Amino acid sequence: MTEPPVELKNRYLAAFLAWLVPGLGHWYQGRKVKAVLYGVCILSLFFAGLILGDWKVVYWRWVNPLKNSEQFCINYPGQFFAGLAALPGLLQATLKWYGFDPILWGYLAEPSQNDINGLYPRLGSKFVEMGYLYTTIAGLLNILAIFDALEGPANRTETEAPASATASTQAVVATPAPGAVS
Amino acid sequence: MSPLALINPNDVHTYWFILPLVVAMSCVYSASRVEAPRRIAWQSIRLGGMILGVLAVTMAILLMINTRV
Image 1 (cartoon, rainbow over the protein chains, first blue to last red):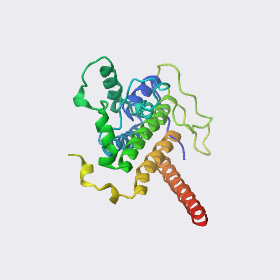
Image 2: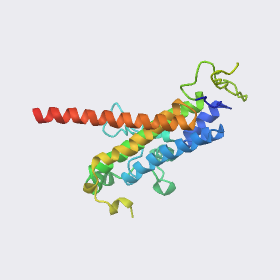
Image 3: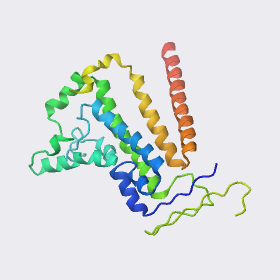
Image 4: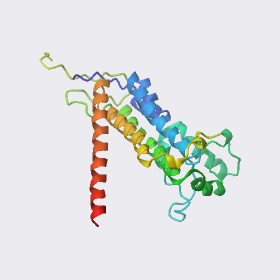
């Protein structure tokens, strides 16, 4: 099957948009089917994880991971790549560091220690662990989507021209159909 | 009220949680490899099937080992 040509446009902008909202970078590039696919898969997995964890499994703390490994939020570096949906966690932690109150109705603000301790007895370890897993995996999957926006599909054939490094629009040549004269 | 309040966690078998992960991973990985929507669909179905198959075989082997120890 011949692959359709991929027009990457400004690929750095596309990659940034793909991080910001999963699928947005691909929508900008005109790859609408992929945009919807990435957006639906990644965001639904992320928000399913948030709901499973009662909106308390995505947050960040400004602690030294070497000196205070128990308090370090090891999942957030993965969740961060979900983009705008996870970014308030970083924002809320920074506001707390400087002594301000949470904003955005406490969305992704660090829960109190009582709330964290009460998650497992209240929801069951199954839901909480799946909440952490779903949100982290969603962020990590968006890394694939970001690379796809930056470089195009990984299995591009050798006859296709590489993506342009400049901001100018450049169409990637599709693989000619078998028997076609190139 | 959280929708989770309507569900008893003990009523949800753990293995059901694997399905959304496998579907999302298969679709996103396949979409990152190829461009044509039909190829994405076929590759994601194949990959999802492979992942579930490997999980099932691994579980079968582990169960066999468990009953013989």
